[in-house]
Amino acid sequence: MRGGPGALLRRRVRDIASGIEGELMAVINENVSTGPHPHWIELAYVRGPSGREFSTAVDNIEPAELHPRRRTRSHGSA
Image (tube, rainbow, N blue to C red; front, side):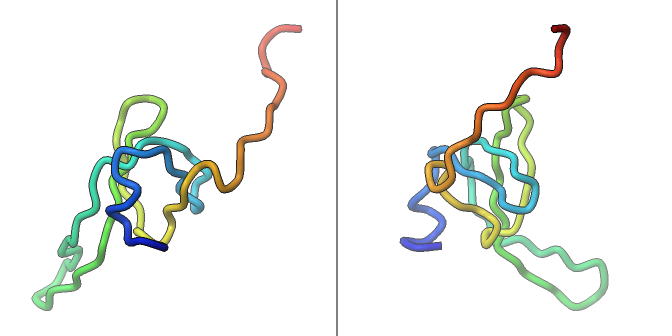
């Protein structure tokens, strides 16, 4: 991520793994190991449209304006 992940804090981002857009709330170096040996990765915490936060790898984060959303038709009643 150009400029480091902190450059996008509190900005609109897209998780390329899921396609979900939201606001980047934090970037944390987190121990994700389940065994006796530590395994540290950098995780991005994004607040999605529902208001809930989710985590993803920092490398999955890009500014949302790189690929503007396409308008789609609602699947509601016609």
